[in-house]
Image (cartoon, rainbow, N blue to C red):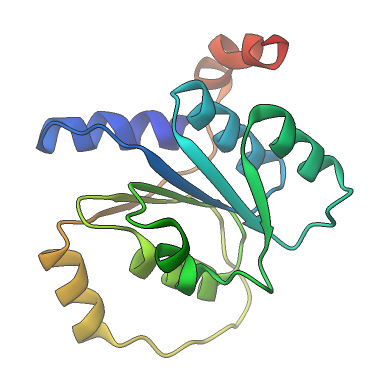
Length: 162
């Protein structure tokens, strides 16, 4: 939630912002909390993850009015074609390739919040010129955040009751 509070705060200091479409990558605890937070703000939320359609993540997504798509059939790189302009993209997978694809999938005037910690020795090639051009001409905001402490999550614990 801290990352999403930061996303709204930072973006609204740049220009008036009324996000409609959100994509959450990852349907673990952090991804689901992000989806709940975004639905409470009336955004259309799509989650993509490697989750079974009968999983708890799928049930929660359905209960909050979000859709959960299989990441193997719906890669991040193609989501802007499926959803249109992605105003807010929250990445919580722990996979560096997904994090880089998330930046590219973020729509014009959009925000990409990277919340996962990638570790190990994965290496990917990135077209730095294309990435820079897309971020600048697309007026994108990209930032990373660490998990929040109690002060960030305590006020929202009641959202589970809604």
